[in-house]
Amino acid sequence: MWNEKPKIAVNHRIELFTWILFGIFAFLFFNLWYLSVLQSGLYQEKSERNRIRVIPLQAPRGIITDRHGQILAQDVPKFAAVLLPGSADPEKSRQTLEKIIKRKIEEPLRDRYSGEIILTTQMSIEEVAMVEEARKELPGVMIEAYPMRVYPPGEDIAHIVGYVGKINSEELKRFGQTNYNNEDIIGKSGIELNYEEFLRGEKGYRKIEVDALGRIVRILDTDFPRFRYTLTLTLDMELQRYCNELLAGKSGVIIVGDPTNGELLAMANQPSFEPNLLVDGVSQEEWNELIEDPQKPLTTRSLQALYPPGSIFKLIVGLAAQEANIVSRDRTIFCPGYYEYNNQRYPCWRKSGHGRLTYEDALAQSCNVTFYTLGLELGQERIIDMARRLGFEAGTGIDLPGENHGFLPTSRWKRQKIGEPWYPGDTINLSIGQGYLLVTPFEIFQSVVTISNRGILYTPHFLKVIQNDKGEVIERVLPKVKNRIELKPDTWERLIRGMTKGVAEGTGRACRDLPIPIAGKTGTAQNPHGNDHSWFAGFFPVESPRYVFVVLVENGGDGSGEAAHRSKDLIQWIYEHRESTLNENG
Image (cartoon, rainbow, N blue to C red):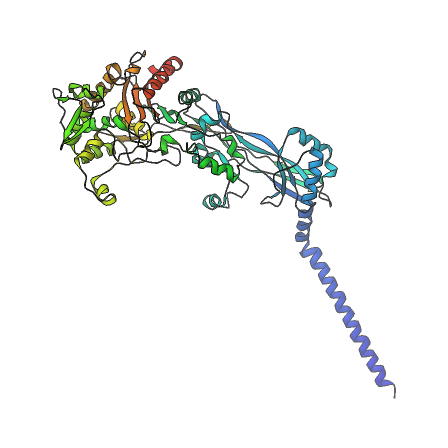
């Protein structure tokens, strides 16, 4: 009996050890079952992720054409070398790539949002072939085609079509990170920005299988990116190019449009810039140089720059005077070459004077004295009210971003900002488009459209048609009345007769020998920073207008000079190249 206790103790130890072994095996078995059955999907997914890579493919943007089908903007394929994440050392891969393509890569390494590292984006087709031949030396490196935006007309359409560039952090917040990522290209200005939602394409992807070294084994699936829509503009590219030629070497604006439907045919702004240079991005130094250029090439002068309108504003004063019944048909005003008020003389542009003139003759001759007289009889408020009725100091509704609007001075403004009352001399200056008054060229254009249509203004637009990738029209822009001004019928007709006389025998006579009747008005705007600005605006044919135009030449002198002569060349070109449109019904 003496050995029973040790025997029992040994048995207890064996039993405990057995249970421990059983527990260990049970634990291992459970984990094996858990991993192989319950977690099999997770680990299979991780394995697949290590073996299969999904590469995003950048979407091409929609094509933009002019009204005749000429391409204004499109994407062309470019090539980039991309390193898959974790497959190799980026610096060593780039050094190897440089040896293969036999040149130094200047651009820095860049991480893409999906994890890949961009080694270079500037590869020629010959370099792509070199890489393909030496693929074994570049594990994990893919050659990827991506779309590059190009603008065949270059500077000629920069202020209309605009340009694209890489999205920045502020734009990413505005557009939303669910729809965009930090590698996306977006519209930065012009049509590219205004119609971003239509021009942006649908992205694709490529699913590839790689081995343990990151080398591509095979392509498993590809969903090709595609553009969604083509935009056709109202722009007449041939006319646009000619307008830019007319402004060569000058700063200025030429706008041409169809008053019957709001279609804009040309909008030249000089100086301009090369949009193709901005697509890839420029250095900070180059960008600063561009925005600090005293000629301001990035400014869309037709919509953003402010100028005194000079004598073109006499059209608005004339309308107000007729509606106020202060210019009867038989009334005449004598011009001795100056207007004397409170012992101060305000000169007419013709120092010898015009003599006695009717209202229509005064318009034709652009007589300052007549309009000084009418302006004082009207008063500042009625002049400003008519200007507002014609759309000044309000948005025009054009489908381009960044539009500015003019400034109509009032007595209240002057008292608040300058601390002075409104003097009669201020009204005298206002009556001939000088003083504090400022306008954009497009506001002048819209006012002349309204006059040509006898009070009807259509919403101006560059977009004509949107088609999907199957060529089906999904949207066609139809004429839409923006403003309708009810004035006495005789008010419009007398003003237009004065404008027609102005071309036939007045300040616009540079255009009188053209083969088509023109109604026009010159303007000479005093410029405190240099020579006067030269304006000419009008429409034709007079009885059934098909074209409205505005020409502004900065520092071009009087309106009967540079602006009028360029207008003559413009109208002659339209007559010779677009004669069939002059007789079309609206």
